[in-house]
Structure formats: C-alpha cells, structure tokens
Length: 366
Image (cartoon, rainbow, N blue to C red):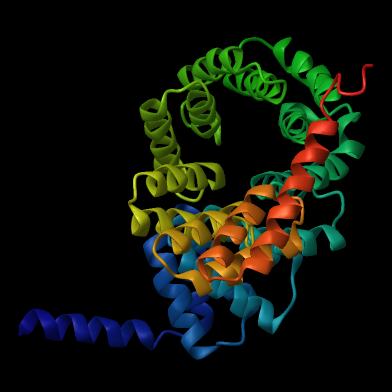
C-alpha cells in the first residue's frame, strides 16, 4: 500500500512538470541512449501538446530504436498528418521496410524521391523494394544513372547486377558480376554467379555457387531461396524444403520462399498450411498471378469450383500467356459440365503450346 502511494505521488509530480522541461528531459534522455525514459517523457509532453509533429517524429524514432516498429509507424503517420516532412516520411518508409511491408515502404520512398531525387539512402532502399517485388526493370531504370558515378559503391553494383540477371539481361549483368568478383570472393558475388547460371539453365553449376554463397553469408537476403530453387530443380526436394524454411527464419516475408514452400506443401496435401505461405507471398507481391494460381489449384482440389473459376478467369484475363492457368480452368469447366468453355480453353492451350514450340531454336532450320 505504501509503495503504491509513493509511485502515485512520484507520477503526479512528474506530470506536473512544465511541458518545456519534459521535452528537454526527453531529448537529453534520447541523446544519451536512455530510450525508455525518452519514450515516457515524449508521451507525457504529447498529452499536453498533441499538435507537435517534431516531437511525434522523435517518439517514433525512439520506438523504432526499441524495435517497436508498429508503434513507431503510428507516430510517424500522426506526425505527417500534422505537417509533411521528407525526413519523417523516410523514417516511416524505413519502419515499413523493417516490418517487411515492402509495398508501403516503396510508396513512401517514391514520395521521398520526388522531393529529394539525389537521396542515396532512399534510392538504394527503393531499389531493394522493387527487387523484392520482382520489379527488375524499375531497379535497372533507377540505378542506371548512378552506376557510372565514382562513389556508386558495391551496393549499387549488387542491386543492379541482380536486377539485370533476373530481367534476362545476362550479358550486361555478367559485366557487373565480374566487377564484383574483382573485389574478392563474397556471398554476394556467388549469389549473382548462381542466379546467372540458373538463367542459362546450368543448374548444377548454380547449385555449387549458391552453396558457396550460403556458406559465406547465410543471412544474405534471398540466398537460401535461390539455393532452394537450385536444389529443387536438381531433384533434392527435402534439401529445397529445408533451404526455404531457413530463408523464412531470416525473412518471414520472402516471396520466393513462401511461394515455393507453399507449393511443396500443396503437393503434400497440406492445404491450409500452404495457404498461409501463399498469403504471405501476396503481402509482398499483391495480385501475383503465380501465387493466386496455386491458391486456385487448392480450391479445385477441395471442390471449391466457383472460387477456383473466379480466380482462374481473372488470372487468364490479366496474363493470357499463362498456359497452366488455362489448363486448370479447362478442368474446372469440364467438372462443371460446361463443355463449350472447356473446349475453348483447351484450344487456347494447344495454340500456346504450338507457339512456344515454334519459338524453340532449330525449328525453322530447314
């Protein structure tokens, strides 16, 4: 009872301090690394003067330093509602990035670049967001002007090289890979080498390079995902599953690891667990056709024909070259006794396959 009274008395005395003293004390605590005290004092100040965007931003920064990014995001958003500020917007983007809300982070970083096009931190973070969303052409466009600058740095080379290779610009990507290799053996260089070899279907070689990348830096973003893909293509399903799970321990929202692991679980008929991974993949790449196709395949297997039909019709409308989606949609129609629609999809599949075969090297050699 006595202890509770003392605490209540101390709290009352603390709350009675002038706002200026509270803020001064909060800033001093923040600068000295006493984050808990800084958060307490910032909040006490804001109870008295809630319309203080600078203080809200400081509170957000303190919360972010404690790792409470969701609370930090809330404070940054309130600060921006009171006054637009590019530095606060960049901090908001960083908080979104740290919580793997990549789409929202990219949106805020684009806003920052409109005001500060030369902000290198914003440019690199935005390039990484685009890369995670599979927007490789955007990464190339963003980093091309910086590549030739003397102070471009290895981060630019790595992001640009990765985007070029994933965008099938292998020859130019190889030039950047060679530049990175001159700096010595590294996980980044081996990851780029591995992805380059995967683009040209050298899966065994890719597997060796990616195993080396994993050994050098198992926490390099995406390294286990690509290693898992190489293992999967070369027939090591168990090893691939383990690799995808290892990636998700570092980054629970990695797109490729979630998609591939969900697909493997679907094949094992673990449908609800698979759906959870597909939902995470869609958080990174909203509307992604490959993920939606996997979910529609589960609906078909479970007899949810209307849900499968709706999803697949949407997919083939958006990506008419998606052959597997046409095949599965035909199956849905046939199960619904809609032969005309099923025959139509089957004819589309036959044409897509014929077109693909015609594009193969050597077909017109005679």
